[in-house]
Image (cartoon, rainbow over all chains, first blue to last red; front, side, top):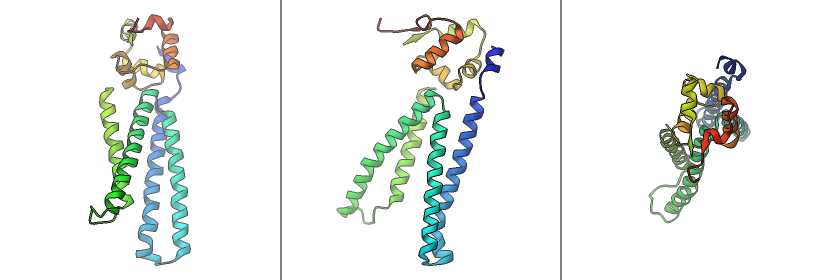
Length: 140
Length: 65
């Protein structure tokens, strides 16, 4: 077994590395969301060029976050990959069904406020986290 | 699908963590395979067979047979 251990590459180390990288990219992306959201009100006002640059920065970091997520998925073992992909599939389904329903609630004035994209992001996140939690417990 | 993973591991006095490390998977995956909650992919089944120096069918058994 010791021979096997020395032969095996540092899989847990690689997984940890890509997880930390994904966390860093995600935090950076959240920060770059805050820049165009609060910057105009707090700092530079209606400056189109700065707003455009802030949004381009947000898109660039967002692409980095997506790539980090892909690298993270590639380092997961097959069961964890399945658990994450199942959660992603259900979150996508919830986004489509929930998003359309939410939009129709707004269009038909059933809800007294505008359907905001933030509501959809919260739905996707909660669905993803809940499915991940259920599936991790299922295979425990 | 039934398997003899737990028996083979016990014969070698390996922990689930030892086996997981050798297979480059998580301990949860080894546990899920042993308890029959998860059937491994063909590449992982071959890896397990190579590790225990056995044929795949000596480790895994199709319950429909």
